[in-house]
Length: 127
Image 1 (cartoon, rainbow, N blue to C red):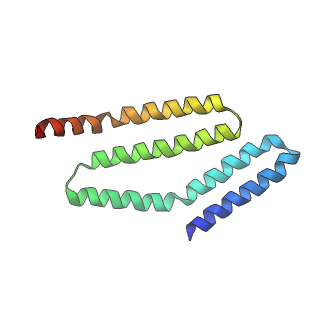
Image 2 (tube, rainbow, N blue to C red):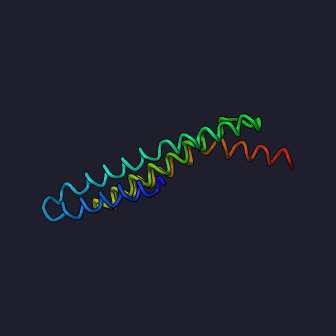
Image 3 (tube, rainbow, N blue to C red):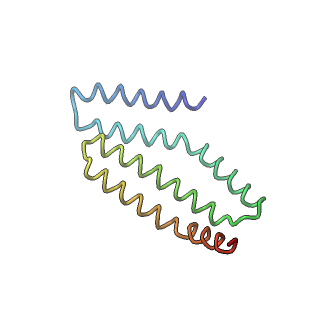
């Protein structure tokens, strides 16, 4: 199962970080970034499968695939924002983490405007 590989990479990164923390504390953040990047790359196949499934479902249902694309972008922004926030927090930079969090939320809201607009349009047609 892939989860065991992901956990293994995480534990290896953790062990290296604990060992390095005693000798070269400044390199620990790099280990965290590298381990996180490896884990994200390990998930690309599954993400590709999910994207293909959602695209096929949108094509079969006749719904607009543009909205599926927007939802995927929103999900990607949320995942990458959370990753960046956690790296900043690991480095002790909570102020930067909160700014990244705010930026991610603003981007998600701005991308969501067409979906919200279409939803409101549909509601007004029903009423």
